[in-house]
Length: 211
Image (tube, rainbow, N blue to C red; front, side):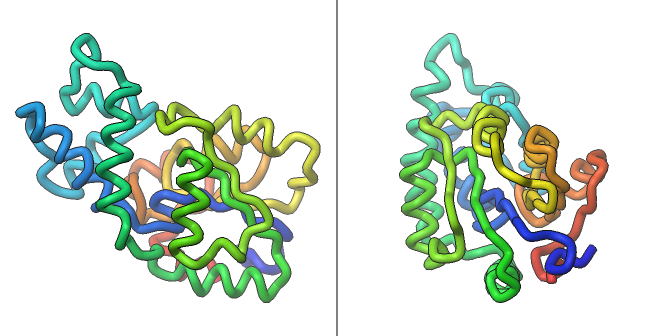
Protein backbone atom coordinates (compact mmCIF):
# COMPACT_ATOMS: atom_id res chain seq x y z
CA UNK A 1 0.00 0.00 0.00
CA UNK A 2 1.51 3.32 -1.11
CA UNK A 3 -0.27 5.81 1.12
CA UNK A 4 1.14 8.90 -0.53
CA UNK A 5 -0.03 7.90 -4.02
CA UNK A 6 -3.35 6.40 -2.97
CA UNK A 7 -4.77 8.82 -0.38
CA UNK A 8 -5.29 12.56 -0.04
CA UNK A 9 -6.46 12.40 3.60
CA UNK A 10 -5.06 10.61 6.67
CA UNK A 11 -7.00 10.47 9.93
CA UNK A 12 -4.91 9.45 12.93
CA UNK A 13 -5.93 7.86 16.19
CA UNK A 14 -3.91 9.28 19.09
CA UNK A 15 -3.26 6.90 22.01
CA UNK A 16 -1.03 4.03 20.96
CA UNK A 17 -0.89 5.27 17.36
CA UNK A 18 0.77 8.68 17.58
CA UNK A 19 1.69 8.54 21.28
CA UNK A 20 3.57 5.56 22.74
CA UNK A 21 1.59 5.47 26.00
CA UNK A 22 1.01 1.75 26.64
CA UNK A 23 3.37 1.70 29.63
CA UNK A 24 1.84 4.92 30.97
CA UNK A 25 -1.60 3.33 30.77
CA UNK A 26 -0.48 0.19 32.57
CA UNK A 27 1.26 2.15 35.31
CA UNK A 28 -1.81 4.34 35.81
CA UNK A 29 -4.29 1.50 36.18
CA UNK A 30 -1.87 -0.44 38.38
CA UNK A 31 -1.78 2.48 40.81
CA UNK A 32 -5.57 2.35 40.97
CA UNK A 33 -5.57 -1.42 41.46
CA UNK A 34 -2.98 -1.13 44.22
CA UNK A 35 -5.12 1.40 46.10
CA UNK A 36 -7.92 -1.15 46.19
CA UNK A 37 -5.73 -4.16 47.02
CA UNK A 38 -6.54 -5.68 43.63
CA UNK A 39 -4.13 -7.75 41.56
CA UNK A 40 -2.00 -5.58 39.30
CA UNK A 41 -1.13 -6.15 35.65
CA UNK A 42 2.25 -7.89 35.65
CA UNK A 43 3.39 -7.36 32.05
CA UNK A 44 2.56 -5.95 28.64
CA UNK A 45 1.55 -9.43 27.55
CA UNK A 46 -1.00 -9.65 30.35
CA UNK A 47 -2.24 -6.17 29.50
CA UNK A 48 -2.84 -7.18 25.89
CA UNK A 49 -4.81 -10.21 27.09
CA UNK A 50 -7.15 -8.15 29.27
CA UNK A 51 -7.42 -4.79 27.49
CA UNK A 52 -10.31 -4.09 25.14
CA UNK A 53 -13.42 -2.08 24.43
CA UNK A 54 -15.63 -0.82 25.86
CA UNK A 55 -13.25 0.44 28.54
CA UNK A 56 -15.81 -0.16 31.29
CA UNK A 57 -15.66 -3.90 30.55
CA UNK A 58 -11.86 -3.79 30.68
CA UNK A 59 -12.18 -2.29 34.17
CA UNK A 60 -14.60 -5.03 35.18
CA UNK A 61 -12.13 -7.69 34.03
CA UNK A 62 -9.50 -6.08 36.24
CA UNK A 63 -11.77 -6.43 39.26
CA UNK A 64 -13.16 -2.93 39.81
CA UNK A 65 -16.53 -3.07 41.55
CA UNK A 66 -19.04 -0.61 40.12
CA UNK A 67 -21.44 -1.26 42.97
CA UNK A 68 -18.88 0.39 45.26
CA UNK A 69 -17.82 3.27 43.02
CA UNK A 70 -18.89 4.66 39.68
CA UNK A 71 -17.06 4.36 36.40
CA UNK A 72 -17.06 8.17 36.18
CA UNK A 73 -15.08 8.41 39.43
CA UNK A 74 -12.62 5.78 38.21
CA UNK A 75 -12.22 7.55 34.88
CA UNK A 76 -11.32 10.81 36.62
CA UNK A 77 -8.82 9.00 38.83
CA UNK A 78 -7.25 7.28 35.85
CA UNK A 79 -6.82 10.58 33.97
CA UNK A 80 -5.09 12.16 36.97
CA UNK A 81 -2.60 9.28 37.10
CA UNK A 82 -2.23 9.05 33.33
CA UNK A 83 -1.33 12.71 32.88
CA UNK A 84 1.55 12.25 35.31
CA UNK A 85 2.75 9.01 33.75
CA UNK A 86 2.34 10.08 30.12
CA UNK A 87 4.14 13.40 30.53
CA UNK A 88 7.36 11.93 29.17
CA UNK A 89 5.82 9.40 26.77
CA UNK A 90 7.38 9.69 23.30
CA UNK A 91 5.88 9.57 19.86
CA UNK A 92 5.54 6.04 18.51
CA UNK A 93 8.52 4.87 16.46
CA UNK A 94 8.37 6.20 12.91
CA UNK A 95 5.48 8.61 13.48
CA UNK A 96 7.46 11.83 13.03
CA UNK A 97 8.85 10.64 9.69
CA UNK A 98 5.36 9.67 8.53
CA UNK A 99 3.91 13.04 9.57
CA UNK A 100 6.68 14.83 7.67
CA UNK A 101 6.26 12.65 4.57
CA UNK A 102 2.49 13.12 4.45
CA UNK A 103 2.86 16.88 4.98
CA UNK A 104 5.41 17.09 2.15
CA UNK A 105 2.97 15.23 -0.10
CA UNK A 106 0.22 17.73 0.86
CA UNK A 107 -1.92 15.01 2.40
CA UNK A 108 -4.54 16.48 4.73
CA UNK A 109 -4.02 15.15 8.27
CA UNK A 110 -6.53 14.98 11.13
CA UNK A 111 -6.72 13.41 14.60
CA UNK A 112 -9.82 11.61 15.84
CA UNK A 113 -9.50 10.33 19.40
CA UNK A 114 -11.36 9.09 22.48
CA UNK A 115 -9.19 11.45 24.54
CA UNK A 116 -11.06 14.45 25.96
CA UNK A 117 -10.73 17.41 23.58
CA UNK A 118 -8.78 19.86 25.75
CA UNK A 119 -6.51 17.09 27.02
CA UNK A 120 -5.90 15.97 23.42
CA UNK A 121 -4.92 19.45 22.27
CA UNK A 122 -2.62 19.90 25.26
CA UNK A 123 -0.83 16.60 24.62
CA UNK A 124 -0.41 17.30 20.90
CA UNK A 125 1.04 20.73 21.69
CA UNK A 126 3.43 19.26 24.27
CA UNK A 127 4.60 16.73 21.67
CA UNK A 128 5.22 19.54 19.18
CA UNK A 129 3.09 18.03 16.42
CA UNK A 130 -0.09 20.13 16.53
CA UNK A 131 1.01 22.00 13.41
CA UNK A 132 0.58 18.91 11.22
CA UNK A 133 -3.18 18.69 11.66
CA UNK A 134 -6.00 20.61 10.01
CA UNK A 135 -8.32 19.64 12.84
CA UNK A 136 -8.17 17.51 15.99
CA UNK A 137 -11.33 16.03 17.47
CA UNK A 138 -11.70 14.40 20.86
CA UNK A 139 -14.57 13.57 23.18
CA UNK A 140 -16.37 15.97 25.51
CA UNK A 141 -15.68 13.72 28.52
CA UNK A 142 -12.92 11.53 29.99
CA UNK A 143 -14.90 8.29 30.14
CA UNK A 144 -13.86 7.01 26.67
CA UNK A 145 -16.94 4.92 26.00
CA UNK A 146 -16.66 5.03 22.20
CA UNK A 147 -15.71 7.32 19.34
CA UNK A 148 -18.20 5.94 16.82
CA UNK A 149 -20.68 8.77 17.34
CA UNK A 150 -17.84 11.28 17.09
CA UNK A 151 -16.66 9.63 13.87
CA UNK A 152 -20.15 9.69 12.40
CA UNK A 153 -20.68 13.38 13.11
CA UNK A 154 -17.13 14.36 12.12
CA UNK A 155 -17.28 12.60 8.75
CA UNK A 156 -20.71 13.93 7.78
CA UNK A 157 -20.47 16.06 4.64
CA UNK A 158 -16.78 15.34 4.05
CA UNK A 159 -15.39 13.71 0.91
CA UNK A 160 -13.49 10.74 2.37
CA UNK A 161 -13.30 8.68 -0.82
CA UNK A 162 -9.49 8.83 -0.66
CA UNK A 163 -9.11 8.82 3.12
CA UNK A 164 -7.22 6.39 5.35
CA UNK A 165 -7.78 5.95 9.08
CA UNK A 166 -4.67 4.84 11.00
CA UNK A 167 -5.10 3.29 14.44
CA UNK A 168 -3.92 0.58 16.80
CA UNK A 169 -7.09 -1.19 17.99
CA UNK A 170 -10.11 -3.08 16.71
CA UNK A 171 -12.20 -0.09 17.80
CA UNK A 172 -10.24 2.01 15.31
CA UNK A 173 -11.25 -0.44 12.60
CA UNK A 174 -14.89 -0.01 13.65
CA UNK A 175 -14.37 3.76 13.55
CA UNK A 176 -13.06 3.58 9.98
CA UNK A 177 -16.06 1.47 8.98
CA UNK A 178 -18.38 4.08 10.52
CA UNK A 179 -16.77 6.77 8.36
CA UNK A 180 -16.57 4.59 5.26
CA UNK A 181 -12.80 4.93 4.98
CA UNK A 182 -9.99 2.46 4.48
CA UNK A 183 -8.15 1.44 7.64
CA UNK A 184 -4.59 0.51 8.56
CA UNK A 185 -3.72 -0.79 12.03
CA UNK A 186 -0.32 -0.60 13.72
CA UNK A 187 0.54 -3.49 16.03
CA UNK A 188 2.72 -1.49 18.42
CA UNK A 189 -0.03 0.07 20.49
CA UNK A 190 -2.75 -1.14 22.86
CA UNK A 191 -3.70 -4.43 21.19
CA UNK A 192 -1.62 -7.34 19.97
CA UNK A 193 -1.25 -8.23 16.31
CA UNK A 194 -3.28 -11.45 16.51
CA UNK A 195 -6.28 -9.42 17.69
CA UNK A 196 -5.86 -6.78 15.00
CA UNK A 197 -5.59 -9.41 12.28
CA UNK A 198 -9.21 -10.38 12.94
CA UNK A 199 -10.09 -7.15 11.11
CA UNK A 200 -10.17 -7.13 7.31
CA UNK A 201 -7.54 -4.46 6.81
CA UNK A 202 -3.78 -4.16 6.56
CA UNK A 203 -1.77 -4.55 9.79
CA UNK A 204 1.83 -3.32 10.11
CA UNK A 205 4.33 -3.67 12.93
CA UNK A 206 5.22 0.01 13.30
CA UNK A 207 4.71 3.44 11.77
CA UNK A 208 8.04 3.06 9.96
CA UNK A 209 6.16 0.96 7.39
CA UNK A 210 3.77 3.78 6.53
CA UNK A 211 6.24 5.38 4.13
